[in-house]
Length: 188
Image (spheres, rainbow, N blue to C red):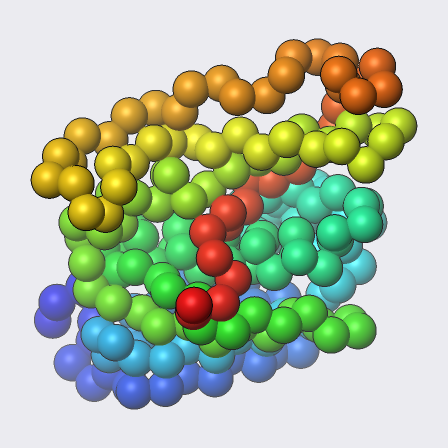
């Protein structure tokens, strides 16, 4: 079947395990119809919140930082795991709603068969350079893609956009977090 879907695919899958959703993502993204809804819960906020960056990396493919925006970063790490899992099967993820509440995150995404749009994934993935002394941070995307309305389909490695080794705001050093999904968290 197209996109690596099994013969019997579902319109909606609600993935709500106790703990991390990561062991179930590959099966879930393959088992939903083109245009289907995937609802995902992950209840391991200590990991997503930066307490165990090595565990976060092994589960979600990125490291979390203990920062003021950790709830948003948690959502973006889960979306990164979903998007990279779907991309392996030529499928694109479009977030509809993303919520971080207390000890869990919940995301609702549409899954589409679109090998052409999967090529844009690197341009929606970033790492964050976070100053350890002040709240300043810079995002570094991992790829560049042409605008959606352009006819060009040339994709490029990203240009370096971070300011260097020292924070220009306060002179502090940087921590590195991610990679994570850096696209929209909600459907506009």
